[in-house]
Amino acid sequence: MRKTYLLTTLLIMGVLLAAVSLWRGHGQQEARVASDVVLVTSPDNNLDIAGWTADELATHLEQLAARLAVPAVEPVVDPITKGVIPGLCGRALDIQRTVNEALVALPGAAVQAAFVPVYPKSLWEYSTYPIFQGNPQKQAMALVINVAWGNENLPSMLATLEAEQVHATFFLVGRWAAKYPDLVRMIAAGGHEFGNHAYSDPHLPTLDREAIAREIEHTSAVITETTGQKVLYFSPPYNDFDQKVLEVASELGYLTVLCSRDTADWMRPGVDRIVSRIVPRAHNGGIVLMHPTEQTPAALIEIIKGLKQQGYDLVTISQLLAPNPERAEIPR
Image 1 (cartoon, rainbow, N blue to C red):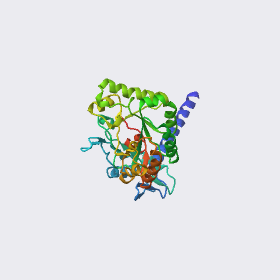
Image 2: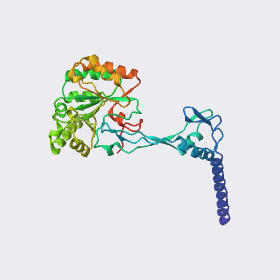
Image 3: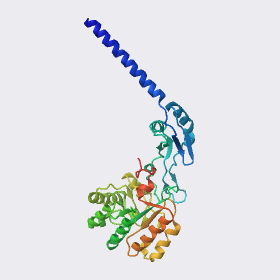
Image 4: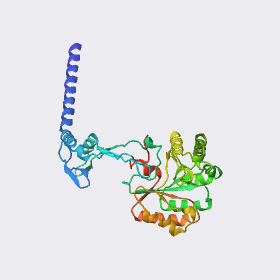
């Protein structure tokens, strides 16, 4: 009796498992996209995929993948400036994610085709080259502010940046940062980024490699200790550098950043002249250099206004140089 009961129980369980398996297989096989769902593969192209199975959609996407792919733009060395121009991510169609999102879409939905970024060669592989600008396909510009003096002008500049919701990159001279930690923290509190402008404001090509390294490392140590930020960018004082300086900065793990547009505000040429050196000469990927002179706060207001009116996003150096517009980082 007991043996018969066990056999019967096993038989029933087997039938139930087989039924569940068949039901699952049938459910997966018959899973279809809901009614009136379209797949958006580009701003001007919608594909009606209502009622399609996963296999049908995957097969069609495989045929579209090559046409929808965008190759990465690789970094290049500019033959004129001898500086490296950063690359940009391309994209590849993510077929599985696109299919998954289409199958769970509600009736009448517009499903965006999913893509994964295709990264160019890392900018870090070009770290012995200077950087004068971002990629010219980016309608963005970065404001770089070198600080070794001008304490009295920083608060008004920071207030303007906050009011305009602009984040800049401040390259600090190390001895200034060590002497005025409260101002450094004020800059950090505004969400701004930091760069390294050497410690004692020297002409670096006149120093040996060990002295150059000390100038850079001491400055970053002060900035990191004061703000907690890791410093990734270096700018030589007076834009004075040679290959030795570039190599030392690279060996220490920095990208050397200069500018493509210089306000020359340190010469105090007048607010109008400062603005005219930037706004009419704006360009995609531009890096604008300024200092906290008494004329710069008023000029900064007009520069930001003028660049925004031309449609430029004003970003940090990290955002400008990043290959992926969705992530402000430069993968190594």
